[in-house]
Image (tube, rainbow, N blue to C red):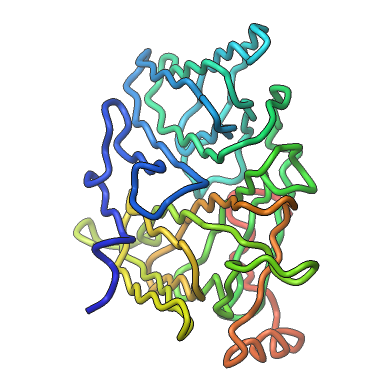
Length: 302
């Protein structure tokens, strides 16, 4: 028996109030990260007290009007321009520190907004990161090509503990590959980070109306810390990775795959240090002789 029932949340099964997706430390075995996703009609709003967490506001579709009262009582107002969809290129985002009150409104058009969170030791200043400031990395090669938008990594965003990014995998490609893990603190080698995967999937242009956009995600463990997840995922689904090797994330032919990653852990160093599964790490060496998929980047310049 696998562990899908424990670590996979299909769309609608993790709702909470105005949030159609709500992953928090209320999930047994989950401690450091959170994700909330709200689909808002025009002029609708959602509110959140960040409490002991820092939050990155990420428009998935449409834009958002953001009002923040930070831990010192300062008021910040910003319009996040957003984008048509997650496949349309990078978006601007906003960082909100712990101890803040956050209101997100949709304006005069519908919007889908993600609130990526992580437990934080200290409050840090509000920041608006423009889409043009988001580095777009083309990672891998051949059928392992993918696009990584690094809006919430340490080199781009000053934060206490959260690491976040989004990945586009064109139809027929594999990402989160080779399988890797980050579940131990080993100085300079690996950091302990739990991870949330939030998925969206679309059919390629020209697909018939009844096409069922689907993708797949694999998580498996070590002998000492077993875990076994093999999930068929669609838009709005979430896979939680508490530990273990994870990957590949597979985009079948005909269907483009997007996922939003949220990571944090108990270590003192905010860094994404990973260890490849030694049975598959050799695949990285084959990329030197292959071109990056010409379909990348999607919706935005490199």
